Length: 398
Image 1 (tube, rainbow, N blue to C red):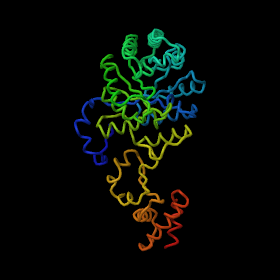
Image 2 (image 1 turned 135 degrees about the horizontal axis):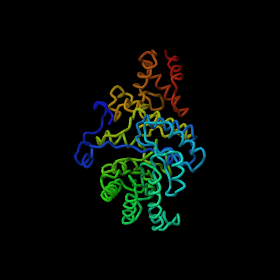
Image 3 (image 1 turned 90 degrees about the vertical axis):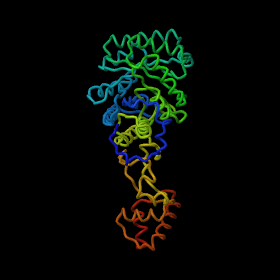
Image 4 (image 1 turned 30 degrees about the horizontal axis):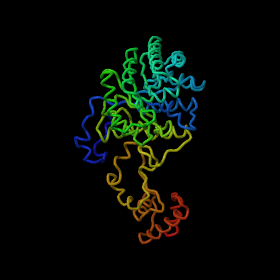
C-alpha cells in the first residue's frame, strides 16, 4: 500500500462500519495483471504499434503492475516483435503471454522465450455452441494444452475459463479441477460479458476458491457492461481473489474491462486493502495509452480525468482554499494539478483566484464587471476562456 498520510484522504467515516470493512483479508497485498496490450487493444478502432506497446509496457512496470500481458504473437508479425521486445527488456514486472488452448499458440510463445502463460478456452454452453465445441472437446483441450505448456518449459500456467460466470457450475468445477490436476498453477474466474452483480462475483470467487484450494492463486477478470466492473472487482477481492485483471483507462471489448487504477484507488482508500500500484503514475500512463490508441477519455473519469481537480463553478471556487471541502482525496495522490478555469459558471471567487494566479491587478469594484464580461463571452462561445483572453478582459477594466 502506498504510504499516504491520512490527512490527504477525505472519505466518509461511515466507511468504517463493520458491514463495509468486514470480509477482506488485509494480510495480503492485492496485485494487478494488466491486459491493456491484448484485451485493451480489442477496443474498436485501437491499434498499437510495436513501439507503442513497448512504451506502454515500460510505463506499466513503473506504475507497479505485477504482471503485464505482452500480447498474442499469432495475431501478426508486429505483435510477435512487440512480445519479443518486451520480453527482452528485463522489466520489473513479470511478462505473461496469452494463448488459446491450441498447441500452435503455445508454441509461438515457447519460441519467443515466454516464461509465464495464460491459456484460455470457453466454458459456457452458449459460447461452446458458438464455437462448435462439445464439453468433452473443451475438457480435452484444457488438459492437453496445460500439459503441453508445462512439459515444454513454461514455468507458470494460468487457466482462463472464458465466460466462466455463465458456465454450468458443475462443469466449471470439473474444468478448474482438471486444469489444476493437469498442471495449471493459477486460475482465472472470468466475467467475459460483464454480467455479474458484485454480490455474484464475490459468491462465485469464494466458491471457486473452495474448489481449488487456498494455495492456488485466483484471478478475477471482469468487464464493465453494467458499469459495475470496479465494484465487482472489489467484491471479488472480498471473496478471496488474489489478482485483479484489467486495463489502463478500462479499455477493452464493448464497455471495456475493469480499470486497474480505479480498483486500486477504491480498495486502498475505501476498504483499507493494501494494493501494489503507484497511483502517482496513473495519469501519465493514461495519457500515453490515450495517445497511442488515438482516443480521449472523459474529463470527469475517475483517477485520470483531466478535470478532476479543475473548478469552473463559482460556488465551488469559493471553497477552493480547503481541498477537503470539494475533493475526496488530495490531488497529490494522483499527481494532478489543482486549478481554476473561467467560464459561464464562474463566480467572484473565481475572478479573485485567477487574478492572483496570473499576478494581475484590478480594482475590487471592477471584479463584478470582469465577471460579467467573462460569463457573457464564455456563454456566447460555449467554451472556457483562455488565460490570455482573461488578461485581455482585465486590461479593459484596469
